[in-house]
Image 1: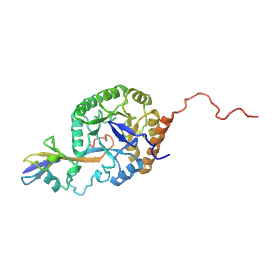
Image 2 (image 1 turned 180 degrees about the vertical axis):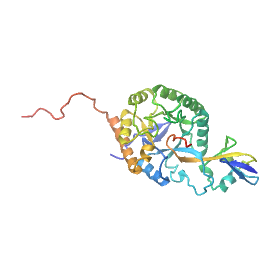
Image 3 (image 1 turned 90 degrees about the vertical axis):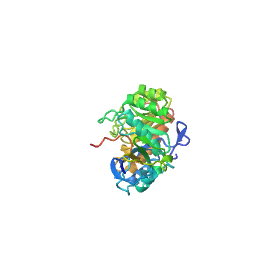
Image 4 (image 1 turned 30 degrees about the vertical axis):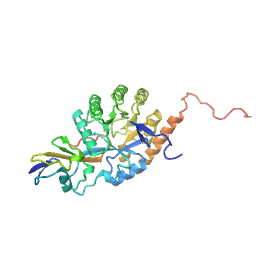
Length: 261
Length: 73
């Protein structure tokens, strides 16, 4: 088996992505560790935040010196935005700072849970889509909201598995499954993954991709965990496509009875 | 003239284009977004855009980020 199941690209808004593992670039010790972890993950989409540059320290390095935008699809997020206005402003700034119309839209509703403000999310998405943005919304595990996001023109939806950075894994697999059955666009499970089995499960349920940051960056060995996540996502995807056996209460012999003495 | 760059008041000689401001800060124009008085500039305008007394300039770029991180207080 190759590192990536061959010819199984993820297609969003006409763009083809090789890896079904997307990764964030926050919380690493330094840019070099970020670079190595991303490389180990095999991801071709990396999320970034948009912030003021440090104008007092002229030696401060730029993330893009380590993450080559020619090699990776840079997906700016609107992390830290609690209002529609802020999310729209940061999206526009991200487009001005980068080269594409892609944005991972976050409108956060609450500081403790960091759950999305889904009403604000839909409102901001409508504004941005009208301006030509390709909006990938970070949303709750709510099938109705996911469908609304699809209906207004989001080419993928990104429901959470659990609160951001919580590492709790998939809290509501049934809702995620309903989302996957309801929407006709790719579903990228975003946030809450703790370890490799969580990522594999998400893919086995039928997710089109998984996005994570803390589970890798916060691990004792981020580079090793990035590798683990890469295998987990590939394994989960293959298992999903291969089709698991049904669960049965009692045993079914796998060795034939015939020929026994 | 007095301008405010990323919240910091600076004394600068007039005229000053956005391109010259970025150069003086050792910033590469292809790595940043510039907002002047809440208006986001096209990169192609950096060279011709003259900054004025009292302008509020925000210079932003991409940093490491996954999802929302708690706000620092």
